[in-house]
Amino acid sequence: MLNQVEHIGIAVRDLADANALYTRLLGVEPYKMEEVETEGVMTSFFRTGETKIELLMATRPDSPIAAYLDKRGEGIHHIAFDVADIHAEMARLKQEGFRLLNDEPKRGADNKLICFIHPKSAGGVLVELCQSIPESDTL
Image 1 (cartoon, helix red, strand yellow):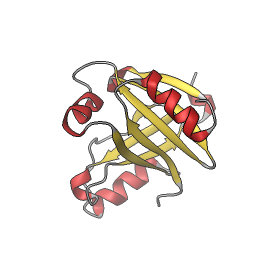
Image 2 (cartoon, rainbow, N blue to C red; image 1 turned 135 degrees about the vertical axis):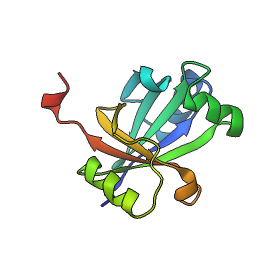
Image 3 (cartoon, rainbow, N blue to C red; image 1 turned 180 degrees about the horizontal axis):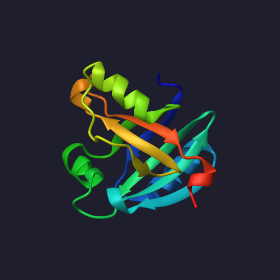
Image 4 (cartoon, rainbow, N blue to C red; image 1 turned 180 degrees about the vertical axis):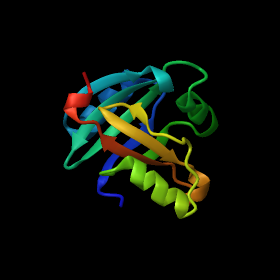
């Protein structure tokens, strides 16, 4: 079962400019910046209520975010949901006919295991599943 919205991902061309904009908009500074080399992205996180905003900037021209920006420009990239058991959710959603973009969860930003659902099988929305990695597993 998909729990609450974990975060909303927003693709940006310039992370410094976007951080300044969202700091003014939300009235808070980002609480974390992190590079995810495997995805070719630098992320910045803001907390607003129980939800987070993740800004994503490409760090290389062949990254998925660079391709997204070239095709669609800046804006909402994905919506992420918290799940308790990502493997079980992936199996359930696959059985329900959703197309997953990866066969196994991978490590994402903010200490999460992640998996994406293809927008063509989710009403045009890129959906991310997120499961927190226990602190004991991060060392």
